[in-house]
Length: 109
Image (cartoon, rainbow, N blue to C red; front, side, top):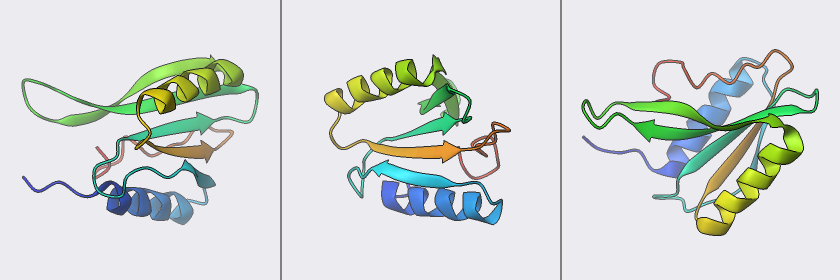
């Protein structure tokens, strides 16, 4: 199966969020071709959730899983550690009081 470049996926995700009037920003620009992507959901109440893409080893299916959640400062510290491990990492911050991130939508896995 052909994989999309990280840049293509990020651009498509941001466009989908804009379509739903959900603000989102690239806070770290990773490698355009193969950089991993983390998505931080900021609910604007001091809380946040950090998502990373995972793989089901049995089926090969991709899915988004929570890497960290709780106080935004704690999530930011976790994010900083991840960036320290992987300088090619993309980070997208989504801001939505209702907690919408659209990662469960078809085509975003």
